[in-house]
Length: 385
Image 1 (spheres, rainbow, N blue to C red):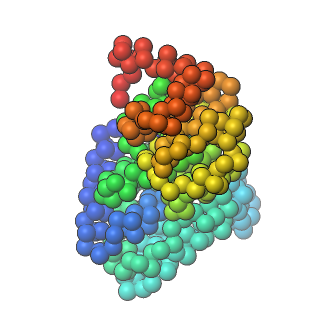
Image 2 (image 1 turned 30 degrees about the vertical axis):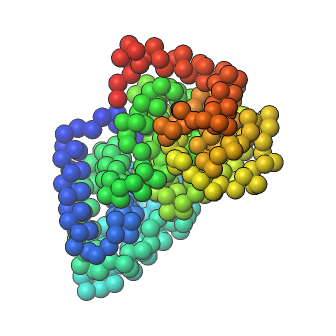
């Protein structure tokens, strides 16, 4: 696929984002729905608007190439062949999933059912999205859904595809903000992610986020590659793991909006390594949950030792910070680099955590190299967030 997000947004996109969010937030306030109930269906509509813009552009190209066909039936069959769209890395939309039909639905009708059906149609015609799109529109009354459809339809169909990605990211961030601390489970502020990416410089290779949330680490890494005049979809092999099913779906949608594909698996990273990551990855970026307790260390004891997921042992304290840090360390290849967010308490740990910290620093060429790269750039002011 081809990367379709820009390095910077323009003023018009910024204004559109804020206006759309203000309208969406006002509708939510009058709906009786929680932010968690409301967020995925709204993001799903933004995604559908994006998909339709790309679909319409590809359909226009097909109409031009088949205009000379002698048979109108032949021309029609070409325009409605999913393969003609998939070949161009474009999602195929049935008539039931297009905004023109959805906007024409009567307010008194089953708008929620029609939207659920539209999302199912998109998944059936585009198997890479199977099980990903929201189908909870029955929670909304028809009047609210019509207002949301009208709001999202204000995103111009002719808007550059890159702007769709920025609008989607903006809504992700705003929904995370409204959910407070819980929002951190699926969204890391863009400035933090950018700092990590600028330090790691993921130009090319395999990239992993074992607590991937909604995929912001991947999107920012792709943006970094695009800024250096490369196609990130060709340069980066994306791998993610996420415990929460709905959050993994957000990640897949986020990747699709940005023209990216990746191997996103649903699993509890403490106990499962579905990417067989040990010693494999060139880059790792992550913002894992902090200070988690009650991790079942009995399930991890067979993964301790050189060449395994926990090469330096398990902490005796009931805290998973150094479980995560060792997972990150063990996933790196010989010259791999990791950047991650961690609780302040991990840096001044005591007892067994302190022992693990010193063993990591003492025995890890990767950590020493990252330290040596980072400190001069921070001191010189080269790295700006």
